[in-house]
Length: 339
Ligand code: DCP
Ligand code: MG
Ligand code: MN
Image 1 (tube, helix red, strand yellow):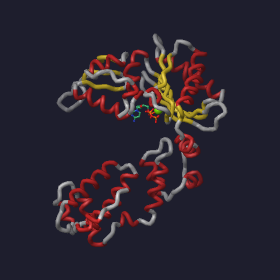
Image 2 (cartoon, rainbow, N blue to C red):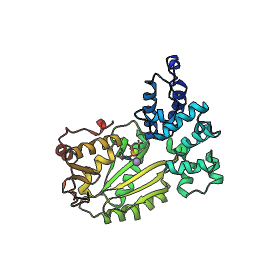
Image 3 (cartoon, protein in one colour):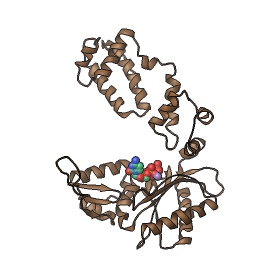
């Protein structure tokens, strides 16, 4: 991290800024985006002051400084420190939190819970915490899942899955989406987008979930199922882990079952990247439309209480290019969808 230069030492609030920066760096490392921004704004505002801010009231009078931050500023001035930072476990807790966040399926609330229970290492979790099967798998294979998959290996996964599916039904179409479709030299996982023209989702689900997946387990390609959902009446997803023949490294793979009529919208969504998706959805909403993984829609009509009056009418879902066209943007090939 950047060091405060000598320039800052002439600032009457230099010590306060120094401590707030440590706190900001902590929130930055733990991905607490909004807190990081709040601290950054407060620090920038404090830097502009020519007099020392000593009380909560003085701090509160500064734009961008809210009451909790103002309280912290007062604490720093009166005690020359911040208890939140002095926590003896701070460093180990900070490092452990970052480690726990790398476990598949573990978010901020679960990771913080383990920290508060006193756990600091993966071994602590494995020996002392109550874990779900998926959490155990995530911990045991934390290094595997973090290993990037070279493009030729992604293609090897593709051949195995395609052969297994086509043995059951040659009419099923398989596309590798995600970072691979964007042309990346390596991927974090393999995203299979699976569809069958002129077939119901029920048919497709039955073939993939009841026949292909069990067969891929039998052949020791699939190793573990992590998550699946058929909650939506149309699309389905299946998340799991797989190994290539002769390899001990477990990689994450996703099967996304998509109605053929929705392939255009599904391709856009599952090709990403996530930032591109956010910006194209924002663009759609600015133009009075709504884009999701099922299609491009006219915006929902809302009543006086903001309740939905209509779903919005479907404009296009089958054809990726037509969706770009209706949005009024030039076609972006997948390789150019990295933001
Ligand atoms: N996606 C998204 N928003 C998310 C997660 C995913 O829009 N929060 C979309 C865009 C992604 C695609 O799904 O490109 C696949 O998700 P992955 O997590 O597999 O991400 P990538 O394939 O892009 O990258 P990686 O190489 O890390 O797998
Ligand atoms: Mg991916
Ligand atoms: Mn994925």
